[in-house]
Amino acid sequence: MKAIPFTPMRRADRAVNDDAWIRAMLQAAPTGVLAVAGRERPVVNTNLFAFAEDEGAIYFHTAHEGLTRVSIEANNYVCFTVSQMGRLLPADTAKGMSVEFASVVVYGRAEIVEDIEEARRGLQLLLDKYFPHLRPGRDYRSIEMDEAGQATVYRIRIEEWSGKRKQAPEDFPGAFSFPDKMSSIAFPAEG
Image 1: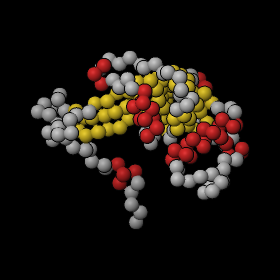
Image 2 (image 1 turned 60 degrees about the vertical axis):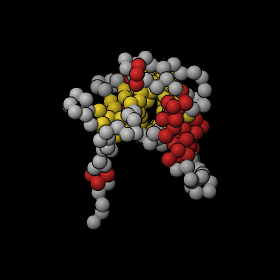
Image 3 (image 1 turned 90 degrees about the vertical axis):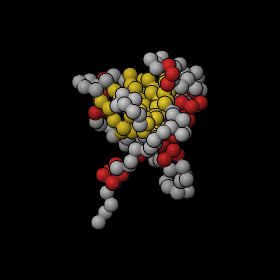
Image 4 (image 1 turned 30 degrees about the horizontal axis):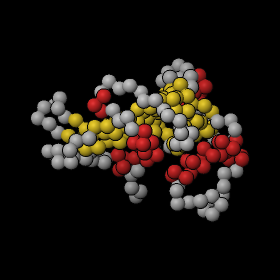
């Protein structure tokens, strides 16, 4: 993989200028958020994605038609981010309250993958990431040409990136994890 320049950061004390750490975050993150300037308004959406480390690229897909495609066709310079929230860090003052976090921000050009073999490869990278225990030809039918053509596959060629992290000592007084209330809302129990 070619060297990717780091985006300068205002808070240098939080910057992570470590390619291996950034690559690991991009490999491990379950979802990423894509930001596009768009034609008429900004567009942000959450995507499943695969980081192709050997290419310095990110692959994701959407439907053939929709706001993401229209926006990227109008302006393909994009921002893509992944993040992880750590513990909440209480303090004696409201201003002192904080949180641990880790994030990566990528800037680059999103391109619609026109080559059917590359589109198939991008889709297979997604399957390998999210279903690593399943294999094509053994556990499911391999991606057919018509299936690869039913979605729009995108490649973001990474032009620059940054990593950012705040981590408190393990014994930080009163540190606690944010309660997970979303699961019961997003995925309520049937019954």
